[in-house]
Amino acid sequence: MNKFEIDGNILLKGDSIKILKTIPDNSVNLIFVDPPYNIGKNFNGYKDKWESEEKYLKWCYEWIDLCIKKLKDNGSMYLMGATQFIPFFDIFLRKKMHILARIVWHYDSSGVQAKNYYGSLYEPILFAVKDKDNYVFNAQDILVEAKTGAKRKLIDYRKPIPTVYNSVKVPGNVWYIPRVRFRMYEYEEHPSQKPEALLNRIILASSNQGDIVLDPFSGTFTTSAVAIKLNRKSIGIELDDDYFNNGVRRLTEIKKELKKSKSQVNLEVFHNSKTEKSLIL
Image (cartoon, rainbow, N blue to C red; front, top):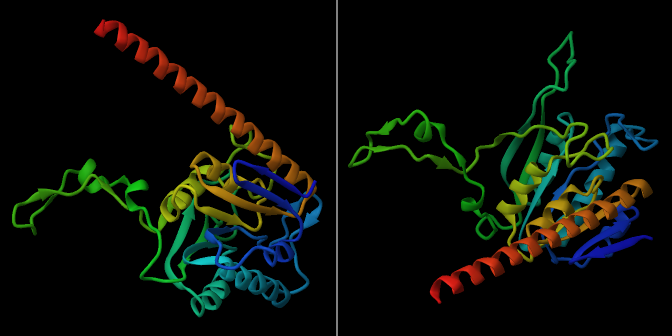
């Protein structure tokens, strides 16, 4: 099986560049890209290491150009990468799109860290749009606590009437979101799985219900998993057979959970309506 579809979420197995060429231009609302980092990780027997940095970057520039073509005019792209390569992506991308933010995804240590230098505890993300005057950004859907107002209760005396600072705010560009750990409910056997919380913020912020979200290097299909939960459509591409099959299983399980939850909600509404009716009578 090279294709699986459930509720408008399409999983495709194959080479990302080849498949990207088959997707219509200007058809996608949001793209999340988490490519191989070229740092030697083992992806189910495939070593993530190119012959040279030049060849790796050439390959990256090819799929970046394809992704840009697939985006709608008001579309957005979030592009991850290793710290040593993200500057090259930044320079290449800013000539073609508008980079609105350079995000740092910060996480906790997995235990043993480097002893002779500073260990890595973050991964960078570029947030770019095609049109800086026309793009989706649902600020109200991603508000976080603003400690200045919520906890410290500081007062802004610069206003005509001194007022306590807001208790919520749009997140800044440093995001603390824990990594996925073994035996967590969302854990899949994959060396670079991204947490649902990370994709939840991105998808809520930069797409609307019914929009299409594309992930050309799906891995554990977290993007598709979050998309289906948030009533978005998605296209996920993955080369490895096992990872693809795991993605099919993951989305199938989520669909069952959503269906079960909906049934429970409908049952509660039914019982509540009967109770209200009996009270009226």
